[in-house]
Length: 494
Ligand code: GLN
Image (tube, rainbow, N blue to C red):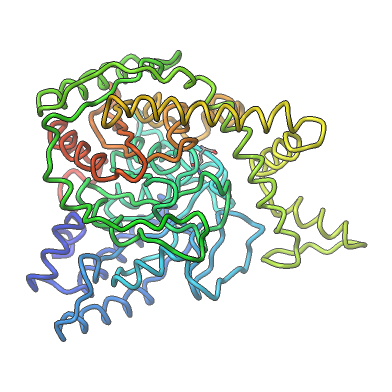
């Protein structure tokens, strides 16, 4: 029984709970046991099995009374440790938040809790969500449940690497992550799961530890497009506490899946053919276009001329905002304090000890590009480039409904690779960053395997607040790709 329960999709589990085939307590116990067994992956920073059991019991009791709240009621999920959770330690993967236990929930986790979801624990992540490999966490690297050909340990991608590994290894039915420049989509591609970054403003950022406020967006990670649609419905919604939260209705995202792609115009942006992209990724991209065409879509070549400036612009805007957001970690208000002979020395000691190398690099870059002498040359210029990129997309969406691109330029790489070359690491985001800068919804769908037997994802990007079209196209792509490979050791129900 236990084995079968961790093998269900979220939608299957929802249906099983509704039919009374099993209880949330059984479902939760099976997943908590899987979390414990999978500790070598280092996917969780904090496990909360007792809390989960209590939530599951409450869900079962609600259901017995005929009062189950909806599709997420009783469903075990994992939460990236960037979301503040009431009474549960929240670290952002950083030493500087040592001992920080929020007295409140983020809006997204409160929404999920309100919908009856059962939190299994808080997942590991790159420090302050800065990274593409889950190598910058104070709590150590996360291992991808997929292995290299020679049995080597691979990165799960980042920064939501713990959430992604947990979904891929069947430790939870779904997980939440955040995406600033690709942190939901790129790890989804590396681990063979679905990852959706909604439109900026679709999910409230209130109570999420801030990285780059004009880019950060919460989203679901799951094993199917349907599961991601169900989760998004429970996460999204206007929130008066976040001034950038959009006052728009939350549609029935699951209903959008059955619309199909007949007559849909799918754009192929020619600028997404980049140097250094593996040939097999280009072939998969072509296959993806052919699948959508066979399913009834029309394929149209489009141009997004400023694409090549997206990565440099992102790596100015994101560090600039981060340097400002991270100023609050001063040894007084949160977490770690390392004493010194004066107040300034205490600040320096705390920040020196509390932040890792990548965070320090971003704070330095950010402060530099915002400094009086360089503001116009770097920050202001990057903001102008950002506008041009958004304008490119706006124009493309006059002729097409959705764009198809690869998610990442390679499959998962070995733990430790690219660590001495930040620019090579930043290149992971080449396909994900443009949609982030433009605030557009984008999803990664597992679409095939590399020559080395590792998952590869394809990305669909849509118009603002048109997650429905994105999900509908993703559902068709998923059906055509028929990706059913599993990480080793999970070949059959274990
Ligand atoms: N890899 C990118 C970075 O390091 C994106 C991270 C993210 O989306 N949080 O900034």
